[in-house]
Amino acid sequence: MIIAIDGPAASGKGTLARRVADAMGYAYLDTGLLYRATGAKVLALGLDPSNDDAAITAAEKLVSGDLDGEELRSEEVGSAASKVAAIPKVRAVLLDFQRDLARTPPAGKRGAVLDGRDIGTVVCPEAPIKFYLTASVEERANRRFKQLQEKNPAAIYERVLKELEERDARDSARDVAPLKMASDAIHIDTDRLNADAVFNAVMAHIRTHMGEND
Ligand SMILES: Nc1ncnc2c1ncn2[C@@H]1O[C@H](COP(=O)(O)OP(=O)(O)OP(=O)(O)O)[C@@H](O)[C@H]1O
Ligand SMILES: Nc1ccn([C@@H]2O[C@H](COP(=O)(O)O)[C@@H](O)[C@H]2O)c(=O)n1
Image (cartoon, rainbow, N blue to C red):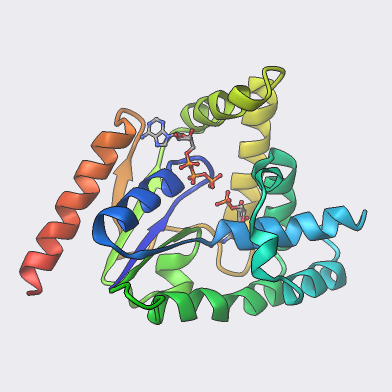
């Protein structure tokens, strides 16, 4: 079974998806990492992430080792990721890997949890369970700021907020696979829910779905 979790940056998708995958014994794929690794490769060459040829070549050359590393989590790489993600051929190159993992999870796993922007709409529109997480941009910036501050006390809230606003706008406005809630997704506004409450609400939906489809 496939569980799709989409939503804007820092809405808590990864935190939730990892926990759900653990609880269910499913594989987990953070699809944002594919775009981050592509963006990071372009940056490492000193090229512009909006350059089609550079971004497509980087996506085509991705190997699993490129998906490791704390530097992928920086806001600079997040911003580069959202630039390469707006290039249709980059998305096409990365699509098969995501679909293969979702539809044929690694040995021993009965399903997969994928989080991203277009899992419920484009990558796995057939997923029987879809969630769309949101929170206000100020709340998300606050979460991301606290997360960054643990590693870099010089992090600046206003910069984090601006970066998230720009990323949201680019991800929502692009022509191909924009950030959008699937019509059959369950919307969870996490502004006033902590991570445990979100997880409990999501697991309750999953159990109900599985009970109804036994
Ligand atoms: N419901 C919540 N309430 C408060 N903080 C949360 C909640 N869910 C996650 N967080 C925290 O918010 C931060 C961002 O969460 P996370 O990385 O899971 O978001 P994300 O949607 O996967 O981000 P990105 O799109 O950038 O990959 C983390 O520090 C996480 O611990
Ligand atoms: N399915 C996806 C996942 C991600 N993106 C793009 O990558 C950027 C980084 O993603 P994070 O989840 O790690 O924040 C994101 O801003 C998107 O531009 C995507 O397009 N589709």
